[in-house]
Length: 386
Image 1 (tube, rainbow, N blue to C red):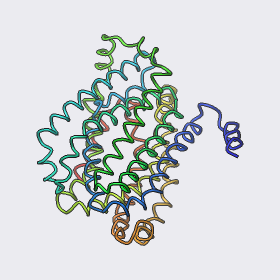
Image 2 (image 1 turned 180 degrees about the horizontal axis):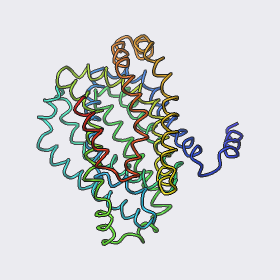
Image 3 (image 1 turned 90 degrees about the vertical axis):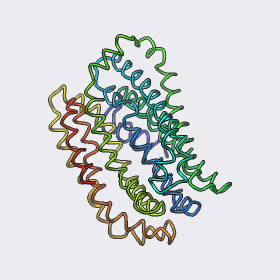
Image 4 (image 1 turned 45 degrees about the horizontal axis):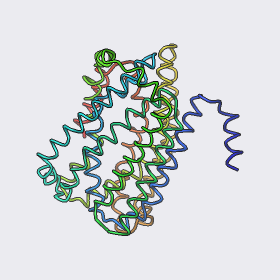
């Protein structure tokens, strides 16, 4: 049955086509997100809202730092015409990532306790020691992700998504059943999943293209690419930082003003609502980026951008309306009665996440146009109104 389905898809969707690339990414991402949604009702019975709150604070801090893990040079990997230049951008991104991890280790050693106390979660402090390791996994994935995107190795990225979600789910469930360790089970499972999946992706790239990559690397070219795409760290890093901070800041503010349990309600609602939207939106964004780069060179960028906006709006509007109506009762039924409040948070989050769903794939346009100074305006406005 599966072989027949693959044969039909292969006949209808030629290799390298935009739709096939989206479908390939969605296959892996859909499985990954569906698995996390399926295990969520079990996790909510193994871990308390307080545990989810501490985990959300950890991932929020990581999410903000990870945006600048490679100083946004990873975005530029898709843009050069020559693979030699892209390879040097990849190595530059990797080097910066390790440097940022070392800096993070110093900051954790100095400020872990004050930060945890400020967020109302003293139990977070010991887990912040793992932040540099998480940053390495996240930063390297970003670099390898865009290299694979440039090479149109979307199947490789789909396998990575499946690996990460499977390992995270298995580890979080296993620790939860065996030890009941509190937020450590959620944080530890996430770290193990990230490292495993990123390590596998790195091995695949080295196996398939390692010798070729090594032959491309030149110290002068590393410097030249750093200067050629300097707008990415100067402008795009701040835009990405503010954009992500506006998404992560609600959890941090809830921790500051309220309790980890409140953060947990918010985190579960945000996670369940954003996951299915991220399946489609993330896959479209991933496949749209190289297509937009090609369209810029051919002069069709405006047409495909407007068409993409219409498609994203049509896909996201109806599901958002439906989930807004039934969210509280649905959450109490699926995740347990103590999670009814999370459904209320979903009602307030739904419209915002619809705009995020539409804007995120289209935001790659600014990277394609190298208009980082312009794209910085939007995140500043969003951040100041968060």
